[in-house]
Amino acid sequence: MERSERDRWLEGAMARWEQSLLRTCFAYLGDLSLAEDAVQETFLKAWKNLDRFRGEASEKTWLLRIAINTCKDVRRSAWFRRVNRAVSLDSLPKAPAPFAPRDHELARAVLSLRPQLREAVLLCWYQELSASEAARALGVSRSTVYNRLNKARRRLRGELEAWHEEK
Image 1 (cartoon, rainbow, N blue to C red):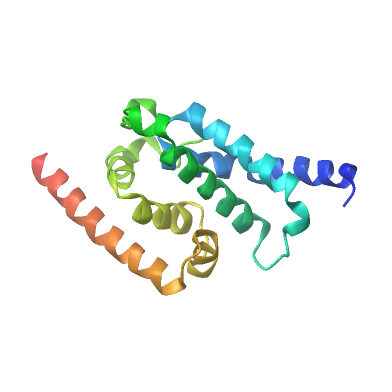
Image 2 (cartoon, helix red, strand yellow):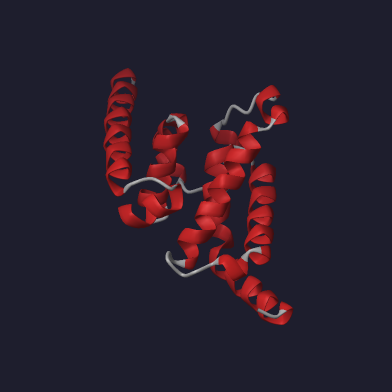
């Protein structure tokens, strides 16, 4: 593929998926500037490897897979582990956050899930991917996605019920 074709693809992909990827990366990393960097890195990796895209998954699923792996790399870095990255609701960006202001308790609960459960929730509930698409993006089976969603649903229900009892 020629460079001009790659550049046209990149412009289109950014227009279509940048906000969606930003929401996913932010929810995964809990920091808007890190999420923006991860999205840029995702598009750079996709642009460089566009010839490897075989169309077995949708473009969105392929890009989400790259974004999730990029976020995992950031989280594994020694620098990230040394820095306390606790997510507070005050740090949620207004536009790209996957949560409406009235859903703060749900946002808090979703962001407190362990990463594997949070990934499944974000992809299926907020990105509206099917379980099969989420499985391809995460590199797991469809039944694993269903199991993670069920565990997440139980944990969220318990946490939100406890929160409402406190009120």
